[in-house]
Image: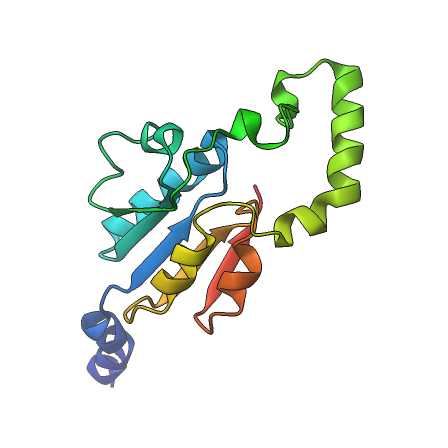
Length: 164
């Protein structure tokens, strides 16, 4: 009986195979850095990971050697910079004086949903095509992946979103 129970418990682990997980890390460098430990953990557990990043000079510089053996997927045509994206308004509150933080947070809260749903980045069309490729088992999505959240959530592929 003990052996039978052990076989029943161990069998799923013996036949389990790694999955193909696509990870979107948001838009800013700090967003992408938050998913690196997650990607490394998935790789250690035998999963295939595709790390989707904008194809900008700035974003390509975030991980010049890649992240482990994750497949780096660069999407988009425009070489935009996050600092200049919102008409030179710095929305990264880490770099602002306290009174500017209050104004920025109020602006973000007022327009947050609209901003998240707007496909403002050139990778949108390429991401829509990439999602259609067979073989992705799940998405892990930083919820600050502007314009991509609803696209991924409506793809039919299981999705986990997070906002650290």
